[in-house]
Length: 286
Ligand SMILES: C[S@@+](CC[C@H](N)C(=O)[O-])C[C@H]1O[C@@H](n2cnc3c(N)ncnc32)[C@H](O)[C@@H]1O
Image 1: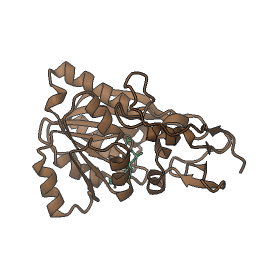
Image 2: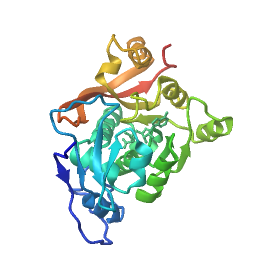
Image 3: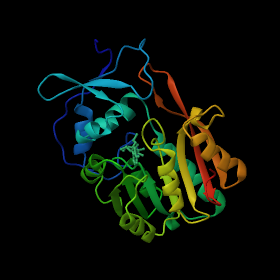
Image 4: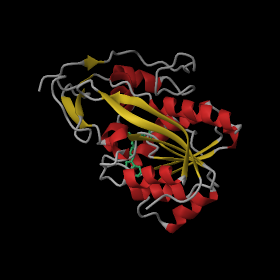
């Protein structure tokens, strides 16, 4: 299939620090510009706009160092994280994702409205990936974030691209959490959970979300994004019953809820998600 949109340029390597003002989405306020150089140099192409794929099956092709084009499925995060800048290039530069910054902005508003200091938060960032949420949380003054992801490649990418932002990072499957890891996570005295762009679609299942939720103190802050269809009454993923019913019962007390554009699909249509900031009042339904 012929590529239809190619993006990228080749700059020389520079060792500078980006200023926060005007930084591109998904870029850290203070990390070395090498990541940005790698990101800018990547050339990728999407399928033609008339083709339609389910969110599980989306892909692009990327120019490899040997001059060939390699195909990357968007859910092959292990392969994507191995290439510095590729995650940011696909999802931020080409498909317009800005969900971490959007959700942390909503969180900041919600905290302000409740008279709570960002400096009091101790966050579990589930599906942490290469650390973009950690940099957004740090930018509003959150002092303590713990990452969890199922992929070792995500942890390696976070260390490589945004070192020092997580106080701790665990590669773990929360549907089968080892007792020692549970104890370590509990020791962080977590009072907030963030799960951005990571629920459903073969990524984080309801049982893993529940395990993470149970690690957060009562009254803690729950920050999540989820595709709107997963919260519909027709949903069969398990999230509609668990999260939808918890909102209805008051177990999850919603402080802010916004429907927003998570990113574009490869056919350039908008993917709409719900962004929810809530307080944990009691265990999840179900
Ligand atoms: C689209 S990325 C989002 C990363 C990050 N939250 C962000 O907004 O930049 C989804 C992440 O969820 C992780 N993930 C998928 N299934 C998971 C699971 N069962 N448990 C923990 N993490 C998972 C993937 O490895 C990937 O890093």
